[in-house]
Amino acid sequence: MSTLRALARAQAVAAGVAQPVATVRHLHLAQRPLVLVPLAMAGEAHAPLAALVGTAPDDARLLIVPQPRNRDQRFRFVTELAGIVLPWLDDFRGVAEAVAVDRGRDVRYRYSDAPQLWVPNPAGITFLRLLGRSTRFRRPDGDYPVHPAVPLLGRWLTFFAERAEQPGSSALLAMTDALTLHWATGQSAVEDLHLPALLGWIDPPAGWTGAAAAARAEDPGVCPPAGPATDPEFDNAALAPAMVAWAAADDDPAARDEAYAELVGLLRGQLAPTWELMWRGLGLLGALPPGARVAGRWAGDRDAFTSYAEHLDADGGPQPRHDGAVAAAVRLHRLERAATSYAVQRAYDDPLVMAEHRLTGEAFVGDVTLADPARVDDSGKRPVLRPRIQVVTTEAVRVPVGATLWSTARPGQKAKVVFVTPAADGRTEVVLELSGGMGRGLTAPPGTVPQVGERLCLTTLSEAFLPAGAFPTADETPWTHGGPPLTDPSSGLSPVVG
Image (tube, rainbow, N blue to C red; front, top):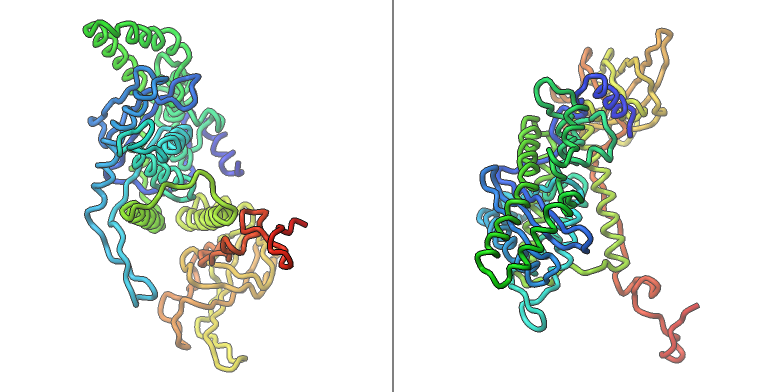
């Protein structure tokens, strides 16, 4: 936990309401998201019990499994879920847009929009990941056939689960994660995973403190758990008897219908409060202005959606159960690059996020007191424009001479530290030499060089492109990591082990 977030939590306790830790929204909000609130049966390995799903507050469809231990009923539930999700996905495949590539010498096409899926908490993401894993390899023929939509849905759910691992992606989001990214409460991070309590801190009822609203929300009789786990008292006192009654009425259609209606009412009562909280959370997030770089990250989600849709159109196979050595290394490298880029983009978009880096010495804010926008460096083979400015700051400057800084106002311009001079009054004078972002001539266009009196935020965080690493092919991978075995050239038979 950062120092500023710890301070915000303390202020939330003192003020009785959650405190903002962001000035902008760091994720994309779709115009037509699909909200899915799942429930799983306790004591069973990923046995779906029910789900409330829809694209609008008044468009909730309840799917239930009267007996989750029954395989046929589970796959009937998945088939019904596919009947909702797959047409929703197809709605985003109608309009494509051209994107310039290779510096404008060619174009490629991607869908102009992409689907966005919301669940209440990270456990909901895990539920969908496991549901996709258990269905994407099923077959519509052979032993134990399933509906053709079942494996297709499993592949899409696996796609969403993999996108959820991508830092900055907005394809599959957990509401608790999205809210805690923008607000700090007066409770622990574990308690923040409880959606009713979290919203109790962020948006308490009139006259209530966040702590009181959260305590009330933790009562299962008032706010049932947000899933996929159910309340044990509900399981024992209400759900189990209703399931027994439904199973016992096998020979009596009227009694069976009555028992089914009771199950529907019980499960809807467990899911409906969370459904309302999900849309309430979306409203709170929608009130925040989006960050400047959110659209770029959403474009990455649209690229991924387009690519996977084309893969399925070409009869591409399901995702593998396990990555090979090279594929795992490539995935890890990609996630690390995305995490680095996402952290930098959030800091550039949001002064509150950048403040955390100012505390650690990775950034400082100061005023321009001197500027020489016409300075030319003629020490090389040809003269180049190298303006210099002096920035005075009251913050600690922990960057050495020769380091390169970037300004949040001009991210494409480098600022090389030439001098760092502490002053007697506690201020520090920093002389910077600028390069880039000023054209190719020897005269800087207006606005490209900071003027005297301008306030700058300078940081070591860079938005420069991070090149991908080089990885061996499968044939070049050692046999210890899944590559081809080495053989003794003299015999051509025995693999070389040592």
